[in-house]
Each structure stands twice: as structure tokens, then as C-alpha cells.
Amino acid sequence: MITSVIKTTDPTQAATQGAAILRAGELVAFPTETVYGLGADGLNGAAVDKIFLAKGRPNDNPLILHVARPQDAFALWDGEPPFARALMDTFWPGPLTLIYHKAPRIPNEVTAGLSTVAVRLPESAVARELILAAGCPIAAPSANLSGKPSPTTAEHVYADMAGKIPLIIDGGPCRYGVESTVLSLVGIPTILRPGAVTREMLAAVIGEVALAPSILQPLQKGETAASPGMKYKHYAPSAQVQVVVGEPAAAARRICELYDGLIAKGKTVRIAATAEAAPFYGSRAYALLGRRLEPISLCSGLFRLLRELDEGADVILAEGVAPQGAGLAFMNRLLRAAGFQVEYV
Ligand code: TXA
Ligand code: MG
Image (cartoon, rainbow, N blue to C red; front, side, top):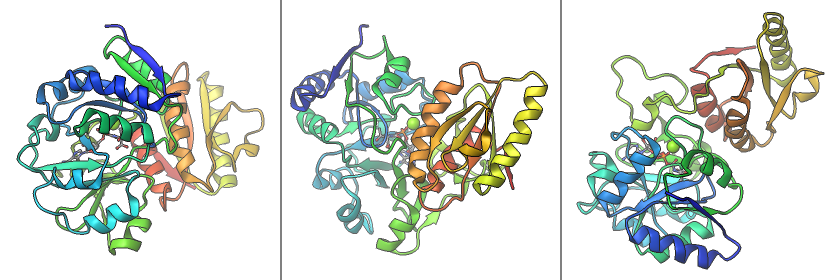
């Protein structure tokens, strides 16, 4: 299959072309403000199946349905989720996914057999135009091969999906560069996956919000994943990733020690640095993740670096930060990439 790439210089034209492909039951990769999505008609089970095939995604991992108008979300749930209106008013359009009991018309392929469904209304204008033009909710996971970091540019999508899908809509780099916050509204509101809409921001609107235990630690024996995606070895590069959490000077001092030791053993080592600590690395090989003062920038930096640094590095030494605000989303992705190999200094 030949994969075409079209730019969004004319978003309406891109949406019209993409919508025709979606309506024919085929896949389209499209930009959102979080990461690129790999979309199919969310009410067509056979089309949704093609997503799992293209990604090599385990078929017990459910997908998010993307809508363009709040009223379309209510049509996908069975009843009105508690807190939904306040959350939608405050955070939609934007990087927040809400999970609640599913309406009977949702195909099992979307929910992987679960009784709940995840819905989000993206901020990206291209994404919303595409959904409106298609006239159906779009089921879309991140547009990477399963196990690879989420794509934050059309080039990343092309690297993973060329030859597998007919169209990629290129909207440039994604604004946030990390997947949406996933919040379950079944029972006590619980964050299953942290993102740019932080726990603190949610709590300011609806009060106490719980965190799924597996956000910062591996699944414990006997624990079932609140979100099936959490149990897979996500974001894991072939290089070994080691995390050091601490203030810039202290973290950098420890990373320099580890770096020098590994180099002495003949290893190829790269440092994933924050801008605040970068001056401490001297002539050692580092790449910038982003700024600690703006933790969301660290997430997109991480996905980019995991794709770039993976080629040729034996070990990636990465700085970690406190899991507050958007720092929680960063640490969630980083610790998974590191297989939870972390030290605190
Ligand atoms: O920002 C995003 O959310 C991007 C863009 C494309 O919208 N999408 C995305 O989709 O990251 P995906 O499939 O890569 O991640 C969805 C996560 C998975 O961990 C999945 O297990 C979880 O949401 N999920 C989906 N439906 C669920 C459900 N009913 N119950 C629990 N977890 C669910
Ligand atoms: Mg994904």
C-alpha cells in the first residue's frame, strides 16, 4: 500500500480527503494537540480491527473515541457520568479523556470487550474538522507501532506506518507531545494515565482525584491493570535507560559519575538532560529533553529522544523530576521506558 502524506495548509481539504477514506472503512493518521492518532470509523468494527493490525497492538487494549462536539460524547455513554459536565466545560476541547459505562451501540472492537468506553474531544482544529467531515466518532490510539514511543511529528508516523495505511495528515509537531490524561468516572474519579491536564487541575474542579497505583510503579503481583495499556512494556527503547531523580546539580553529579564509569567500560552512553542541569555535563554527550520549569516539554523531548538516541546507544542516563503537576506525566512515561530502574539523590 502506498502511504500519502498531505500537509494541512488547507485543513478543510485535508479533512475532506481524510473523511472519505475513513468512511470507506480505511485508516487515516492525523494530528492532535497531544500526539498523532491512527483513526478509523469508531462505529465500524471491521475498520477498527485494522488499527490493531497496523500497530501490532494486543487486542485486549481498548481505544479512545474522538468526538468534535460535547453532545456527541453523551451519545457514546450509557447515562451521564458524574462530574462530566464540569470537566467538559473546563477542559474540552483538550487533552482529557473520560471513561464511563458504554452505550450499547459501541462495537466491542473499540472497548476490547470492556463495559466502559473512553471519549475525548481534541483541541486540534484539524482533528475536529476531520471528525465532523467523517460524521462519526473516530477511534484512535497513538499512531506508533505498539511498543514504540508515541509519534509527535508526521515523520515519526511515517517511520512506523509507511506501507500500512493510505494517508497521513501532517499538521506539524504536536503542541503537548504527550498523550491525554485518562480519567475514569466509574466510582471515585481516578487518573489511569497522567497527562497535560494534571491531578491538581482536575482536583480544583471536582475535588479529590485518585491515582491508579501503576502510574509510578510496576503492576504488582495479582493486581489487574485499571487501564489495559498500562500492563504493556510501553515506550521501551532497545537501549537501557537509567533514571536519576534529584535537583539539577545533584542529579548531574551522579549522572556524570555513572557516565564516566560506563565510558571506561567501553559503552556508548547518552545523557537525556534538562536545560537546568545541562551546564553541569561539560563535554559529555547529552541531548536536551526540555525545561524543568515547563515539565510538559520534558515529555515530548523524551519521546523524540527515545526515537533518536535509541540508535547506537547502549545506555541512556536520564534525569527525573518530582512527580508534581505535569512532572507526573513525564515520570510515568520515563519510569516505564527505564523498566523502573531509578535512583534518588
Ligand atoms: O492523547 C491521546 O489520548 C492519544 C490521541 C491520539 O488522542 N491517544 C492515545 O491512545 O494515546 P492510546 O490507545 O495510545 O492510549 C489509550 C489508553 C490506553 O492505555 C488504553 O488502555 C486506555 O487508554 N483505555 C482506553 N479505553 C479504556 C477503558 N475503557 N478503560 C480503561 N482504559 C482504557
Ligand atoms: Mg499509545
